[in-house]
Length: 395
Ligand SMILES: Cc1cc2nc3c(=O)[nH]c(=O)nc-3n(C[C@H](O)[C@H](O)[C@H](O)COP(=O)(O)OP(=O)(O)OC[C@H]3O[C@@H](n4cnc5c(N)ncnc54)[C@H](O)[C@@H]3O)c2cc1C
Image (tube, rainbow, N blue to C red):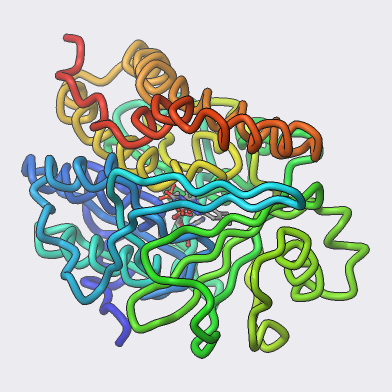
């Protein structure tokens, strides 16, 4: 069932908001929840109607779960919505390794984002979906920033806020008019493709993340509640162009890694993303902060995206709470430094692993080393799952 809007565009346009948040994914919805908890008037806007599908492996690691708990959302995910994760298997042409996972769950992103959004609404966040937000002017904002909300019938409404948080995902589409401010894709970045299958046989067991790695990209397979098999992949754009179809390329990667073939692959309705690995040009502008994928992203091999998005949203809400009353340019510079130190620096393992995954020889060497010395993966797995740094902000 669709989640209702809590107000109309005209009503949103008639108010002065403390914060307008663009994008109701994990970064935007958690930022909204946390700001409303502090008593701020928050408008959360998304161009899609919710619940909406999202290309993602749906693996929510322990870091994410501990952060949800910290935000008072530890009970958000019911047992029947998620499958506990205990293992990850990585398969290449010649090697395969099985790594224990310390925790985490697999859950469809449609459901995860819906649950988070419902909790934000219960906290008093005003929600408006089916409208595209755009920043039409990035010059010095004075005491407020205008956001233009456009409905599908092209009618547009300006809304004003003391601060805007852009959590609009990889494409940074709210900055369409400012290409120089948008995040840029890194050369030869892979693209994301995902889909689900209802009846896919018994070969892939629940609780395990299967990764098939090849020089043309990698494919992650996970069971969701209800037995759905989720397929999420990062594929080489050229290999995808040369392939007969997306299903054919995914089948080739899975067969090359000697994993069982998947029944019904040709019927999957694939959704895609723009190039995945992106570096941000700016993390703040006058009365605008960026967080989540909008503030840069590295390929999803280590499954850190949701945790980073949640941490970005959490941190943004804390930061805005501490600075909004006396906002100035130095707050924007401070946000950039804080975001780099607390979030972007954590991508280092992800960057390494992404580099290794691009060379078939390096993949075979890495997997055979892990097979012989499995303990070397422990610090990486610990790092990816350890609770996030939510220490109080510097004054
Ligand atoms: C193939 C693949 C597999 C992945 N697997 C995992 C995994 O297993 N675990 C994990 O932790 N991470 C994974 N990730 C990463 C994860 O999906 C992202 O990092 C995460 O969704 C980022 O959240 P976000 O809130 O920043 O953005 P998003 O979830 O992308 O949300 C952005 C929202 O903004 C809205 N929006 C965009 N533009 C506008 C606009 N102009 N106006 C209004 N609304 C707008 C969109 O509709 C969207 O709802 C994967 C990613 C890919 C591509």
